Length: 127
View 1 (cartoon, rainbow, N blue to C red):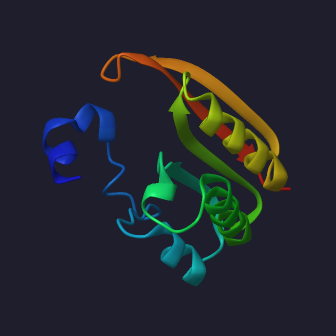
View 2 (view 1 turned 30 degrees about the vertical axis):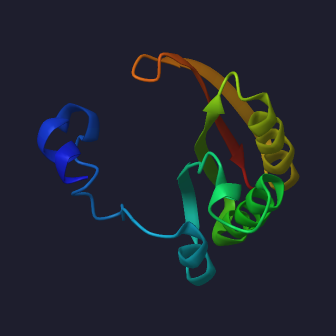
View 3 (view 1 turned 120 degrees about the vertical axis):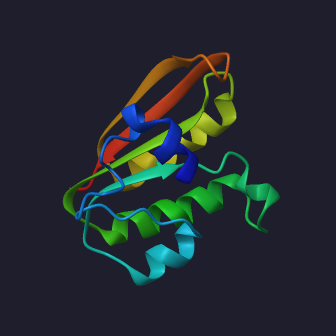
């Protein structure tokens, strides 16, 4: 974050100085157990959570999306980066679980030069 503030100010803008923005670095599960009332959540998906927990990918994502959904206000928006266009397994799980909790889900493929491949971004709205 400090490097981004110093070397990428055109990307960050005033995001870190805004009073209505809080950047949380930590375990999303722990945070979502304690907090609620969000109009928006930006989530950077853990690509292979099954490597870090005793849950498989589907169960990890299901539990996490349930917590995100619970923490959001009606009409709140979830925006996330999902996976490589080539990771069809992860994309399938994300699509299934996201649509289980959120309405108006959408996915967009964007070529990310630093990744050297197309990447998928997703979003959904809490009813």
